[in-house]
Image (tube, rainbow, N blue to C red):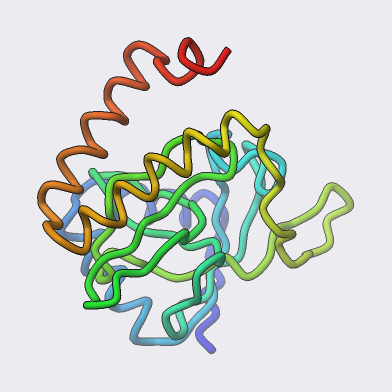
Amino acid sequence: MLKVRLGEDRLKAVGEFICADPRRACAAARLFRDTASVVESDVRGGSMGVVIPDGARIRIRSDAAPPTGTVIVFHAGGRTVVHRIRWRRRAGGWLLTQGDAMRLPDVPVPIDAVIGHVSAVRGDDGTWQPLPAAPRAPRRDRALSWVVFTTSVVLLELHPPLACWLLDKLTRAERAHAWTSSLLY
């Protein structure tokens, strides 16, 4: 197991340098996966809800491909994302992920974009705790998520570029207009 001991400021500077260029981020992810190591990182954003709140510190393991339901860290759209695996394509190569606090699944993620899985989150008391199961969303949210998810799975099996296009359009529309809230409530 590789453990890096750098000062907090130096470690953040190295991380920002690596993540500033998608090619460096992908190369670092490949190196990390190949070393079977553990790193710690701070999380920004609320897409994982109460499981991993905004500002939480997580431990990321780089070992074998985790099963459905596991929270993973992956590189997508120039960002590092922490979301849960909802489905893995049978023919290989693609995952569907979704944040626990999100209504829609993410744009399909190529399996080689996965950096690792979240093995623990630091609690308020400073101790490391395993991640709890995903909380149950309200019924309306689950229904909409199921419709979009099922459509995405079928499209991803039949035509991956079309599935990526559809989920990208739905996600952009959600960011711009919050259409799921107006539809459901």
